[in-house]
Length: 208
Image (cartoon, rainbow, N blue to C red; front, top):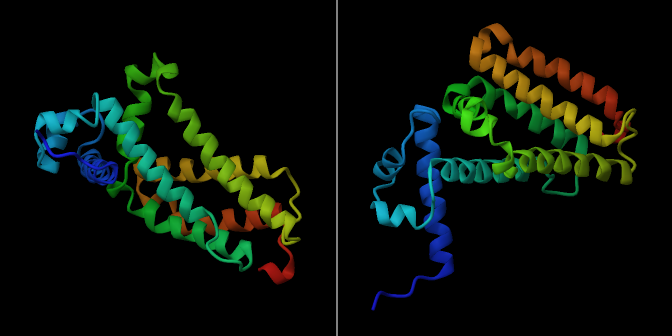
C-alpha cells in the first residue's frame, strides 16, 4: 500500500511545480511552453505532474493565481503606519519589475490573452475577470482604509482610482515590453503618475 500523503505535502509540492512552471513560461512564453517542458524543469514524472494539473491552460491559470496572490499581499500595508507612504513605495517598486520586464510573465500573458483558446472561450476562464476584480478590490480597500483613518480625501470614488492605478501599471508594462524601458522612461512616468495619484487621493499632510 502506498504511503498516505498529507494535504500540507500536496500544497507544498504543487507550489514547487507552479514555481517551475512560472520559470518556463517566463523563458519560453505561453505558446511555446509544453507540459513536458515544465515536467523537465520540475524533474517529475508525467503521472505525478498530471495528478495536479489537467492541461497547459490549467497550469498557466495556477501560475497566475500564485503570482497575483503575492502581488496583492504587497499592496496591503503590513503595519499601522500612514498608508500613503506605503502605497507610494509600492508604486515606486514597480520600476524594478517593469524595467526587468523580460524576466516577467508579461510575454506569456500577452500570448495567452491573444490566444484563440481564451478569445473564443472567455467564459471558460473565469479567473481572468476574478483576478482583475480581486486586485481592484484590494487597492480600493487600502484607499477606503485611508479614508476611514482620516488620511485620504479622494476626489473620485476609490473604486475608480483603483482601476486607474491598475490600467496605468498594466499599460506601462505592455509598452515597456514592446519598446524597452529606455524609450518608455519608466522612472519618469512613475513620478508623474504618483503626482497624479496624490492629487486624486489628497492625503493629509501628516500622512505623507
